[in-house]
Structures are given as C-alpha cells and as structure tokens.
Amino acid sequence: MSMIPSFFGGQRSNIFDPFSLSVWDPFKDFPTQISKENSAFVNTRIDWKETPEAHVLKADLPGLNKEEVKVEVEDDRVVRISGERKIEKEDKNDTWHRVERSSGKFVRSFRLPENVKMDQIKAAMENGVLTVTVPKVEVKKPDVKAIEISG
Image 1: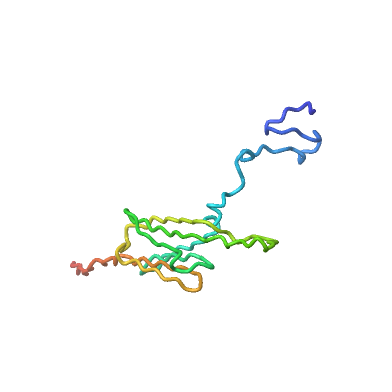
Image 2: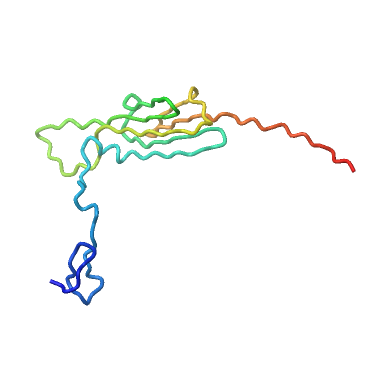
C-alpha cells in the first residue's frame, strides 16, 4: 500500500509513476446493459433540418414498412415518431451464430418551434427512410416606405 493517500478513490500501483493512478469512475455502479425493449430506440437515428419553408425530420428505419411506424402530433407542437421491430420467429432447428440487428419498440419526440403549421404535417416512407415535413408559417415582411429627407 502506498504511503501517499489517493484522492481519486483508487490506489497507485507505483507511487513513482504518475500514469499508474487509478481514476475514480462515477458511473462504474450504473447498469451498462440496454434492455431489449429499448435496444431499437438507441439505434433509431433521426436528422432534423430547417429550411426556409419547413422543418424536415428524417429517420433511418431499415426493414420497417409504413404500417409498423406511427407519426403523431401531441399538444404544444410535439411530433412523436414510434414503431416496433419484431423479433424473427425462431425455429428449433436453426443455429444462430450472431444476432446484431436490434428489435423492440422505439419512440422519439421532438418539440418544434412556434413558427410551424402543425395542421399541415406530411410524412412519407421510401427505402426505409421516413421523412416528416412540417411547413413553417410565412413571416410577413413589413412594408418599408422611404421617407424623403428635406433640408
């Protein structure tokens, strides 16, 4: 045991080597496994861009068809995209060597700014990519009148 106390929660393996310090990890006691219910949620990637005309959300949902995905509008300008990837039926004669594709339910919610037309949202699904388009309210430019300066 070292004669120098460690303020980082660990012990030094070599008191003369500053790089051998065991650094305290505040997350070491948290569970690191993701439940099967939420594994698809973690892999659902969504891009959100704003154009001059609309807000556009694009979600990569490979292997899903439009019947397995829901796009909902909640109060106060919230768009919710949800769905479920089903687990493949297992046959007792099958031998699985690797299972990497996620399955389960996913839900993503986005609060949109005040400048949107929530009643005109459109959604389309093509090649496993969901595109949700939310038009923006047109901002009326103020009329500018030039004033002649006398004098």
